[in-house]
Image 1: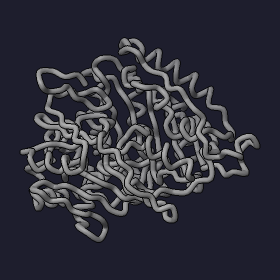
Image 2: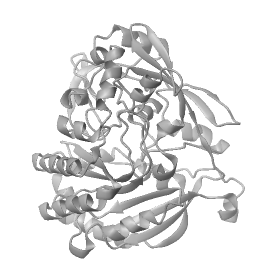
Image 3: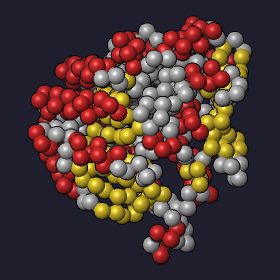
Image 4: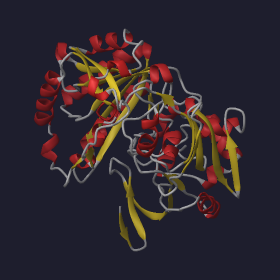
Amino acid sequence: MTKSQGSERVHGWGRFPVVETHVERPRTLSTLTRSVDAADSMIVRGNGRSYGDASLHRDRVIETTRLDRMIAIDEASGQVIAEAGVLLSDLLDTFLDRGWFPPVTPGSKFVTLGGMVASDVHGKNHHGAGSFCDHVDWIDLATGDGKVLRCSADQNSELFAATCGGMGLTGAILTVAFRMKPVETAMVRQKTVRAPSLSHALDIFERSHDWTYSVAWIDCLASGNKLGRSAIMLGEHARIDELPVERRKTPLRRPARKAKSVPFDFPSVALSRPSVAAFNRLYYMAQRPGERLVDIDPYFYPLDSIHDWNRIYGKRGFAQFQCVLPLESSQEALETMLTLLSKRGQASFLAVLKRLGAESFGLLSFPRPGYTLALDFPATAENLSVVNELDAITADHGGRIYLAKDACAQPQSLEAGYPRLDQFRKVREAHGLDKRTGSLLSERLAI
């Protein structure tokens, strides 16, 4: 962000699109509440790690990163109460050495607690643990007009369901109470399996439900009988007796890691088809099958070791496409998508496949039973056209797009994928939130 004539240029992690707007950064919950009350319309933003335009507003953005106080932890149950601006990285630094780990974690630890609720984030364990809001006991929500409401499954339950996955469109999340999970060590027992094609990959996922974590890197440029070849990483939290002897005295210690940085915006040739295809071949061969112990950070947050990795996509930024497809149509839809990418030569540097489990209670929550595919593309006109084609394939196969990643879908994509959208709208209207909250995303998708 850079200041310009009293306003700031603000963008999401994809650096596309960019908006010039007024930004407030309150230091206390009461100040945040007053800012919400005073705003004609606004969006609350965490650390700006949603990829597209979900945390952007033309007139007013209220950022919560200074609201970073941890209020309490119950060491018996693992319940943590914290302000919405607390970063997941700070939660890890504070509680992992006490033997507590987030019940669900996205692929970056530089997200805020409020953002995790607003996006109802999922992780590599969704097939067993559900999404983050399945582990939230309650939230305090400022809805404007001086109102602060406690929301849970039992109190203001409709507003709770609208807020969990509601992309900040129900007001300002002030505090969150959620349950951590106990772990013995700060290491993961990882099993790597190569899948020579998409059908092999899906079969491995279906046979690996007993593993707590599973995720696949997928070669989106492979074709023919190699279409969808993947490297699947299964994971379990390591027990103390599985650690090397030298690590057993301090099993919860995380090794110090010095993050690298991307110092400049990469030229477009860096992510051309030949360079990405060469990388994909080398990466696939480098994923040696078998089991080994790895530290928590490289397993859950591999890209966090490179600060500003979004600069790899150049000055224009990038768009991420992510969808979830029903089990019954997943293979056909994924084959259609991967064939399209291979024929077009559109190179996605990052391509991730995961198996999702039960649908969340959140009215606009993304996960549903099936497979989710995430792809990154430099934000060129040609690539954005491909993303629109992928959106159409998703709709044709009964899937849905992920609002926390989206930057260019059309309203029909939202309508097709979210059957509880009208219920969400009614909750917003009932509390006057359709007038007080908004974003470029809600404007574009006519939410």
